[in-house]
Each structure stands twice: as C-alpha cells, then as structure tokens.
Length: 425
Image (cartoon, rainbow, N blue to C red; front, side, top):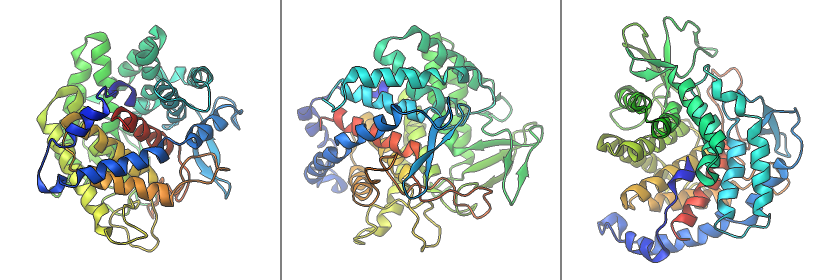
C-alpha cells in the first residue's frame, strides 16, 4: 500500500503546498508544519526499527506463524497461522523499515532488514491461492508488492497477480461486491449460509488496491471494474447520511437487496466503530488514487471530516485531546483507545493530503499523532511499538480483545512515519 505512494517533493515544495488552501481552517499551517516536524522525530525514532527487528530475528512460537496481538503485562506476541487475516502486516512492517532504510540511516543495516523481510514473506507465498478470504490485500500487498516495486521481483509480481485472481473469485455481479466473510458467528447472530447471506464489511475497502494493481500488472480491466463497483455499492449501503459507517452489510446474494446493517466489532449497530471509519476513509482515498473518480474523493473527505469531528469533541481535555476511542459512541468510562484506528486514519488522511494538497485534516492528524506518542507507546520490553489497541470489544463477541498491542497498529505507525519522510520531514 504505502510503497507505491512515494512523494518526491522537496521540503521547500511541501512548504508551498502547505499554502495551497488559504481558507480559515488552514491559516495556522505554519504551526502545523512545526508540529509535524517535531512529531517526525518520534515517529522515526530508532526504537521502532529495533522493536520490529527484535521480533523478526527470533523464532516464532509456532513455526510458520505470524505475530498478531499481544498478551500479558509484557505485551508478548500471540502468533496466528498464515491464513489468518493479519499475517501480511508483520512482513509488511519489515518492508516499511527497508523502504525507510533507503532514505534514512537506521541503526540496523539495510541488507539485514531486507533479508528478514524475504524470510518472513516466504512463509506467506501459499496464500496467493487462498480463495476463502477477502483479506488478500492485507496479506499480500504489504510484502510482495513492496518486493516488486522496490526491487523488481518477477516472482512477487506473479504472486500479486495470482492473489488478485483469488480475491476476484469472491465476486457477485448481482450484489456488485466481493464477499467479505463466508460466515459470521457472535452471541447475537449466526450467518452461516452463503446461499442466503452475502456479508460485506467496511474493512474490504482496504483490499481493493490488490485488484487495481492486478489490472495494472495484467492489463485486464475486469479486476479494476470489480473494485470500482464494489466501492460504489459500499458507498450506498455502508456509509450513513451523516457520513459515519456501518461495519457489516448483509445482502441477499440472489437479488442484491440489503437484508440488514450491523456491527460485529463496534459498540452497536447504529454507533460508529472507529476502525471501520478509518478503513473506509483510507479505502476511498485509495480508490480515488487509482481511478481519479471524484465520487470516491468526496467520500473520503466526508468520512475524514466525520472522523475528525468526533476526535475533536475532546479538544481542551488535556488527557484525551487527540484520543481515538474504539467506538466514538461507546459509553465512557471505560475510555478504551484503539491505536490501530488512530494510525490507519492518520495514514489515510496524509494520503488525502498528498493527493489533493488540501491540508484541512492535518491539524487533527497532528493531535492524534501527539496523543499516540504521549499516551500509547509500549515499553521497550514489549513486542510492539504501540499499546492500547482494541480488536473487538462488542458485548456479543465470542472472543473480545481490548487494550493490547496489535501488529497492524504498528504497521500503520511505520507507514505514517514513511509518509512524513516523503513530505520532507
């Protein structure tokens, strides 16, 4: 995802870009620039690289498994098999470090980072043929597309193409979407018949880049057509009139009719689960990057405005200014954070800035980044860079996981740091 988005502007050029929009919300951009400059030192601190490489250079608790979330006071990783949806984020994190090493001097030699990246991604190659999941973008793109883009690997190029074919197999023309989950079980409902239930979640927007890249690499426009139609259909049914998002839409696979709109990982069906909102705003920015369809740009901007408006409800609260809670509508206390939602949203909004030159979201991005640095850095003994992520705190969840370190919180933390480098910081 991040590797194909390298910004080549110099710092001088970026400073002029900061003045693109002179409207009232952007008059303080000089201060925002200074804040981002300060934050870049924290996001690019050597400890992040050392944290990732500490895990990368030791054996997994189960051979062939991948870091997912942490457990216990020491924040030690729990590992999952390669078919688990987050398996691509740790190899991808090593690639984000390698990408960074080409631009900045790190405490670890670039060649050592590359060797670790190649060793970890090798264990993922089988997933290119996995047709049982919509998460192939997460599983394949962070490592294999990086390998192709940065080093021209023909093998990884072929793996990306095969994965695009596998993801495309989940298409339903009547619904106009890719199937996200084959089934879903909670204490509240059980969707277990693919013939009657077609489940689509907000997260799926983040996997569409695999199809767009599949079209670029093969010349087959069908991949991109499906990605674009999926984004268009999701815009109709996942995004509410107030620009918040549902987590899950259940369609009738025979007619395409909406059967229900729910949450599985958020607080309630009508609440706004912050990570789902972050996936959506980033996903639509990515769809715009590939298509230049203004419908998707408008969607990403509206979703970002909503996200920022909810974060900014805490302006002036010294403990919570910039905090991203796991669900914007969940009762507090407990004030559960989700650092993964925070970092996904920041990276998505920095992508929007790159694509448009409009800096309206940068003030909130800096507040979110500051809060994460001040309140959510994991101790040096932990396996993760960040703490205080929430996987699923829904009261009907069969296995709730909250207040944890999380592999994709770290991945997007690294991606944000790399975006700052590309902005000239």
